[in-house]
Length: 142
Image (tube, rainbow, N blue to C red; front, top):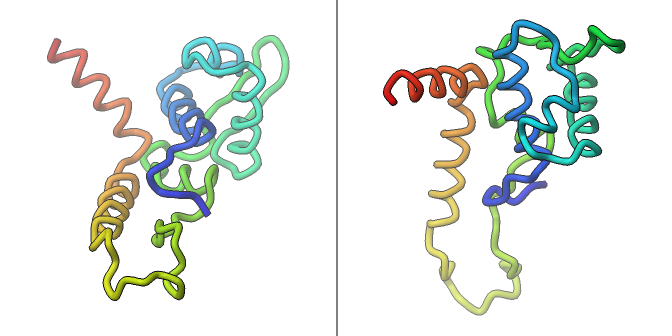
């Protein structure tokens, strides 16, 4: 299970790659994504192949090949991609076991639950297509 305060490099690559690919009219190669995002050419293809395996992307080899969307960007939320890459979110973030804790109430009070709820709501409601819409809006407003 992933710690919800950590967004891994794999999750970041997956989300950014899906946004780039969904916004492209032609297939995009792994090395192009790696160059645009600034991530390792060795890590990006592994993440992309996982997205192919789970039917988010299609992949075609060859000079005219690359990655294209298999699912519509409007149907993919960031939470499902984060959990695909990092595992299901874990709500109990305390390193101290409840049985061994000397305190009656948690010293962190309810901040853990609030952060978890905020993260899950944001990532659950945000679609890949929203990323591109936000970028277009930002360009128009500048």
